[in-house]
View 1: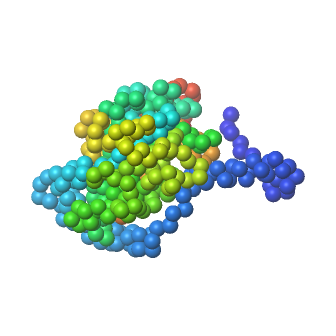
View 2: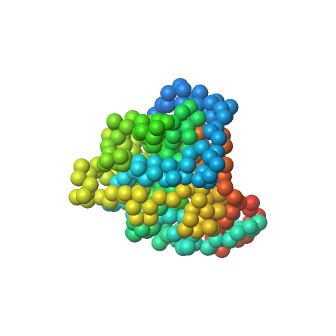
View 3: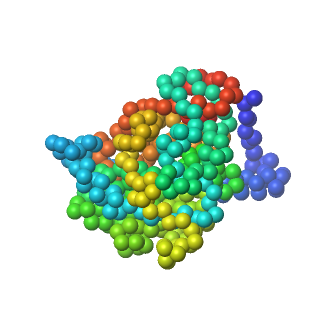
Length: 340
């Protein structure tokens, strides 16, 4: 039976204070998905997209430039590893990271289907927990020239489940941060994405960030996995691990993203051809919810934070691909959705 939302008029709300309070609480909690309110400067907000749209990207190299962006594959790999972040995971967070091949192995997928089955959830409880093994934690990387000069290094983290506060929960959680470099590859700062403030997110100068060598150290919010510079940066509704002054003795889990499962190019996942194609899937990576903040996101290549500040050619999704087959309920016609 279709779900019919209730609509409360202002008059009804005045007659029922409890309903008015509940409505106000709902609107306040919806702020979880409306961004943290950090403003971007005028140039980045308005000029950079214009430069990116009309500017001419660098000419591709004759060889060793798989994505044809003028940066050699070797240099991209070196920069990605040099500035790969350390993400401190809250020890009380029970929704851990994983990788695309990991979740595909534990889910049922079909390809080229015109009909999928509707289900309330795509992943079972064990999949939603993610993996306890750091070897299964993969960070997906995209290195590209910035249209207004310099280089961006995107780092995308995949968690099978977003265990947000109250009812703000959804399957699959793609989080990211972007390190900004100058033309010579020297670090200038980083954009830390969180919730809807993610294209690419609030900017922090390199001197403002905590670092271990060249590696920025950031916090992953408990359950939501939003990326923060430190506890002072946390949104009011978030909690996270302590900053861990001594990473070697940290009671929480420092995720050195270049270790364990390591780094993988976003546009070329070598460990799985199917996973590589799945990253080109333009549907949602899990169930679709009714309330704000309860639907699974789309993959990195279909998010506004992907290739932020880059030339238009950067936003070129790879081949469309796989659909998962969720648990049977009843059949519906669908073009491309992981589940609804």
